Image 1 (cartoon, rainbow, N blue to C red):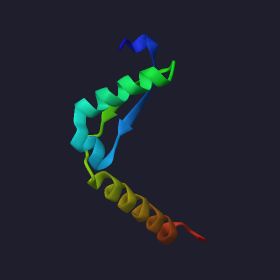
Image 2: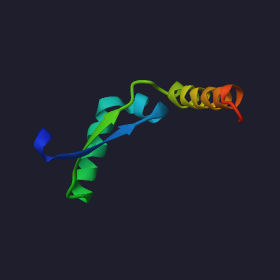
Image 3: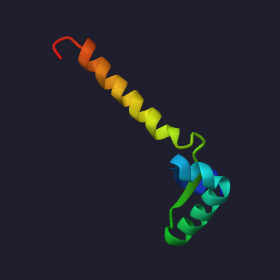
Image 4: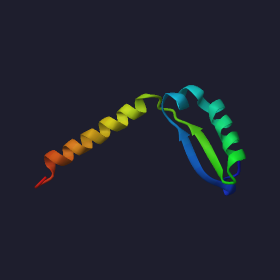
Length: 73
């Protein structure tokens, strides 16, 4: 796929993207190409299932820091 015709990118995240890898990404990209005139690159995530938990923990830590260390909060 040429970069000139690329309109976006979708990441297959979590355990499904990690387990399916490149073969799943190619299948999804081919199927999407038949359904939409917009060319979209599909990539598998490399973080696995822990990515969701890690993101949730980072968001919770940020919220706690905001509550604890913001004057007047």
